[in-house]
Image 1 (cartoon, helix red, strand yellow):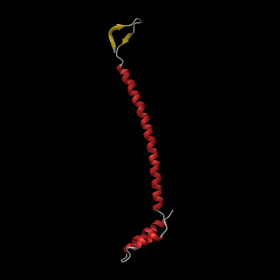
Image 2 (cartoon, rainbow, N blue to C red):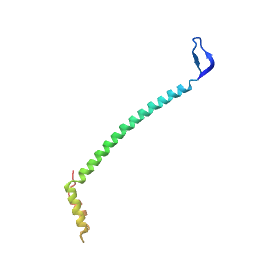
Image 3 (cartoon, rainbow, N blue to C red):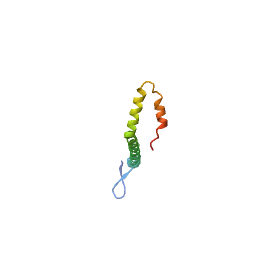
Image 4 (cartoon, rainbow, N blue to C red):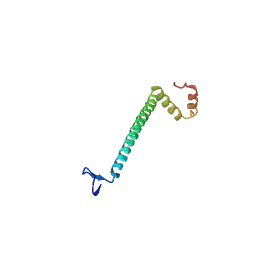
Length: 99
């Protein structure tokens, strides 16, 4: 914004109000801060994605083994038989835990 009718010695108008430029500088600073925050959150998201993928892969590997499926099917079958309700607890104590 120029002062009405004022000119300096070289004939150029004098700038009176620098608030739009200051606001522009503030907006640029905010954009830089948001950009850094976005990059940081992107890195965090990638780390979390890798962690979830590892955990899911471990669960899938454990649950899809033949030994696990056979044991689960056998336990479910035995619990349905009359008079064998306590047998699954006995099987759990007798079978070794996979490592």
